[in-house]
Length: 475
Image 1 (cartoon, rainbow, N blue to C red):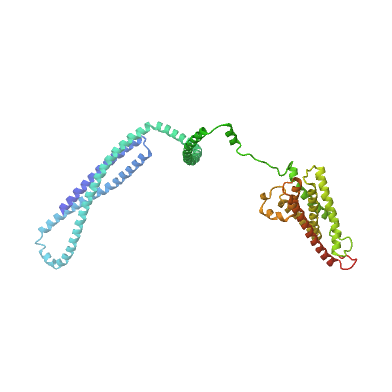
Image 2: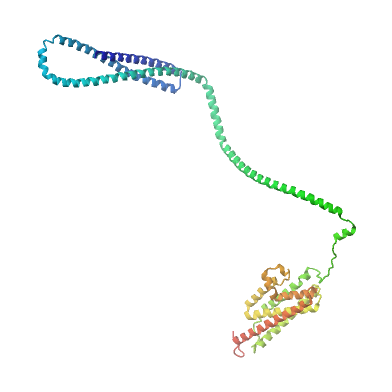
């Protein structure tokens, strides 16, 4: 027991000495930090000094506890010495206590049980003291490590002090560089939009350059192919020219051969008809058109569908109208011929054929338009105008039939103006054949007979329907 107390006391004294040494080291570090702080370091050094001061305060708070532990251990040692002295006195008075011991023998058994429990407590106490001894050793090791760290910290503080002095010496240059950096940053910020715009333009230009390069590459390939073809063609041209040169060299260039090449054949030209100018060529078409317009105008102005008196029969009614129609047809045909020949100087190859074509054409037109006007009234006159328009395109009076479309080619042979134009052409120029005029007269006669027969039938129906009582005209 006395040995254990001596070991614990010795260990506590060693820990107290170590703590005192650590306190002294920390005091030295705090003094050094204070000296460095007087040199004007940055706020980080101040924060470090504050941390060291807090650490010193903690150690100061730990030191009194260590001193109290040492005092307590000393008091325990004194108490144990007093206990030993008392034991010796008890041993000296042992004979006197023999009876008391015998008396207490009965209670010894009870005390033994309590002693066992006390022994267990002493064992636990010894275990705790061993744990305390181990903790003291760990604390001593930590304090040693801490002491070494404080020494390293002192070296670092010295290095920091030197760096702070160098930083203070170069602070002017650092401030000037910071000002230049700020100016450069402002200039960079001001030029940033222009830089962005330039980058966009550069990007567009790069895209255009890429497209142009692609097209240039394609064009280069085509150019290469073309040059290859040109080279091949040049070779062929050279060969062909060489052959041609040889053939030309072998050719007999006499005058007779030159004339033969210049005029290999003699052409025999025979004029079937002669047309002085474009007006003569267009005259057949214009005259056929004029006669149809004259017939249409007459039927618009003259009330051809109204009888003058009560029609006794359809034939008498027809004859009263036909006599007027034939008179107007003959007059307009002859008047047209006189104006064209004498007034405009139209050159006619066959005058008799020319007059006959005019008369039969005028009578045919008058029969067709009068039938439409009497049968249908104003709608019939409108149908006559439509017929005129169709004949303008289908008669081939201005251009050859082959230049018109299929619709007019189908109508060409079914319209009277076609035959009138052909008849006039033959009579004026004698360029077709003698049978053309005869064909024109026959076709016109058929149109005259057909439409007058239809007109007689229409007049018969009108008389039967509208004129039932003699001398009375019913509307």
